[in-house]
Length: 315
Ligand code: ADP
Ligand code: MG
Image (cartoon, rainbow, N blue to C red; front, side, top):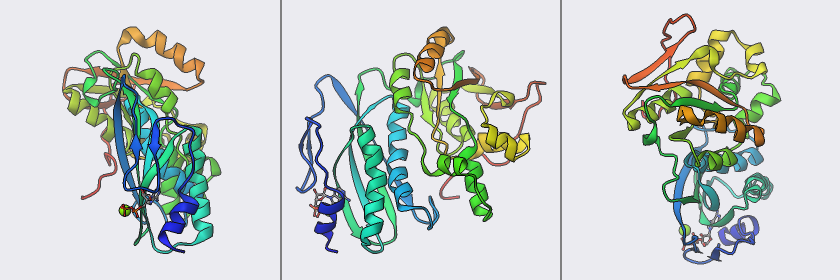
């Protein structure tokens, strides 16, 4: 299949968005952001053998390649608008492309996100998506905005995707619920938008809670204490492994794409209210303190040392 045919057939989709003046097919897309907003932009790459196993379904890959970028918009409190998609493919197989595009557009359509351009090349299987979202000035959930005394919260449950990954690596069978957590993470867009009204700092958990929270601590020049017994763990995770292993996964395995955020103590009541309204489970796991460093503590006061801090490239 010819490159341009492929783009027209699988990656050209009309959108109702009025802010897209020119979409796929020209040298550039032409886009018109709202006058009263600023842009939030992020891109993420998935590489075969590094970020996903070769036997991932093309639907899941299409979905996930967008979900992980959208998760960055969520963590900034931005409203998704547009996306660019760069795909490098070993070959152009039509049924594979069809399935990939289906997974991708399932999520894009859900957020009324317009695919406005990209790049298509032949090479190893590598997918990059770049998303653009709108933010109100001064509402960005920056990593540098945590304040001493803030409460630290996370959405959902942690460690499920990490367990799925560990089982896949060991060639063990994986419960479909866990596999869903790994391959179909739900970007917390609604949550991020609501949080942008009153939260201080936020980050999405892609590399592991400890590693990602550390970014907030460094950029905000503060420290934190978290309480392991308070980490939100799914029933399935608790049933599958010993509690210490569950904690380790929750703290240092990535891929959950939940949000970790800080709020002033005075906003706790409001947080509980708004998260209840959208049926999002949120759990307080600790607090920001002045003394630098991340302390992970048990109820009895004992501090926990992590075996691994989280995923890093180039080590
Ligand atoms: P150029 O040569 O100007 O870089 P391309 O030939 O790479 O343009 O792409 C032609 C058009 O198709 C451009 O508008 C580009 O944004 C779009 N495009 C290419 N690949 C994709 C893709 N995978 N998804 C969406 N749009 C794409
Ligand atoms: Mg090009």
